[in-house]
Amino acid sequence: MASLLVTVVNTTEANEREPIFKHIDKLESNGDDITHKIYLALDKVIFTPLNRNAIHVLASSIDDVADTIQEASGRMYLYNIDEFSTAIKQIASLILEAGMEIEKTVNLLKTPKSRDLIIESCRQIKQYEHQSDQIYYHAVAELFADEKDAINLIKYREILASLENSVNRCKNTAEALESISLNN
Image 1 (cartoon, rainbow, N blue to C red):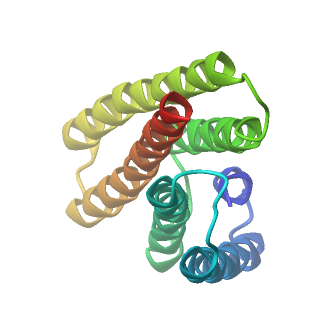
Image 2: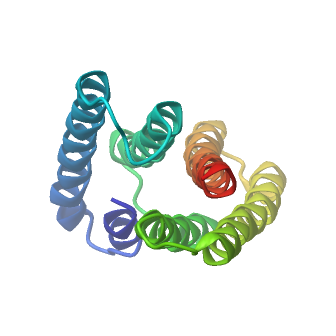
């Protein structure tokens, strides 16, 4: 989903964006189904590879990332955004970087004695979130300083907020992964 988000904000032709937005929606729905199946499986399995609550928290936090990516994408689509600012593109790229780091870290959970690598990946995700904060705050300040059209100001502010929320959810996922690593 994060990769598609980066694609959509870097696509110059508006008519090429709609199928990408729809694909993001479909992936988010698939993610909801997977999360639901995980919850159902947790009720049926007696022995789990990790603490039952930790699996639930991790699945929920990853689902939250997907939800917020879809939220940002949906706002871009509904608001019929023609041009994406540098800040939007940068934060979308940070979401992709954080998402790839999350994927790598989840895979590390299968590897014995990978605690240090997991902790380092979690630190990297938190660094992406910090970078996103800085971009977000500057972009919002620029919007209020430069944008004269109140409707555009609101549209871009909400999109930026959704993107920032997505990176925050990546950080929450990193914290869940870190907790799993330290407790297992």
